[in-house]
Image 1 (cartoon, rainbow, N blue to C red):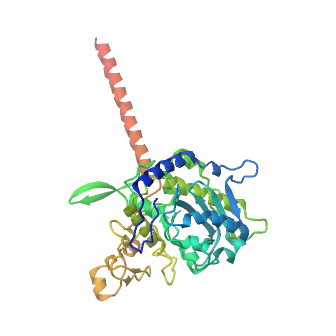
Image 2: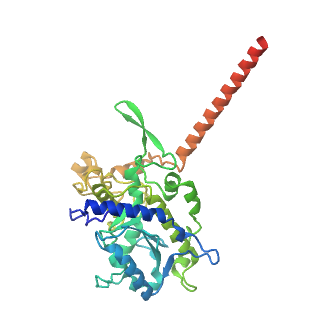
Image 3: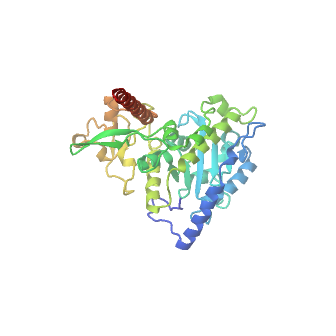
Length: 402
């Protein structure tokens, strides 16, 4: 991905053509060489090679000195992307973070122990040459690759007073690229009627979960290498450090980093205009919880449906209007409401909440399209077998007649 300026600035990064070609060839070499061997666990103690646990202020300074390389816009470097995962208990403005994992483009990984580092982790250093975690997360012009950090952004804003910026959220980017990317499994389709003609189109109403992403976008051999053993970690494990950071926390974060990297490789970045659409869409998507004055934690607020105004198709301009929906309690553009609602300003319910309230939404199931394809294959195989039997019968009949 190229370095970009702030999405609100209206400017874009520039590069020389000759330099771009050289860097592309060098980057290809790097991508061929890095096979993520650093994520292979050490058989002796179950730890991961190439993963550094950061628990003290001194260790944090060393780690941030390395990450500082990714906080300079348009800096001469082989990779611009950096992968970030978060772990904690009940992550939201009601919960807390337990650890943060940061992996650079070469696979070097740091896991910051939020509990041990305490306030030091979020302290503003005030030194541009020695930035901390707060500055790193708030920098808007580096490419922090993440996966649905709506709750994380809400948490670090209201609990730690840090505003997360510069996100490339793969969950919303997948939605924007759905149907354009070659996947490792067939995506689910839905029937649509266009001018009286029925067509099969790829469903773009719902966001895919992590499990669905793995089904559709990750190769079988890579999929098997991702473990989910650390997905269920209780609050005590995230909070208590009596015997240091529990191995399940390290495993959970490393495995999530693997998932991010494998998923990220499906998409193409580098077009400045398209990248800006991805960037601004990611920002809008992850602001959905953080910008609310009051959280309801109900089905109208927490769901996998994306409001239309979040996804930037051709432009990053913000839609006009600002009307509060009585169900999800969000201030939304006027296009999310009917004309009658806008005139009377009574019973203002956005289009998504109307659908949720009527229970008329059909949620796609994981692997539904794959099962359909298997069924089709079985039917075709049965038909071919039947044809074979008929041919054998007819040939034997002709033999008897002769």
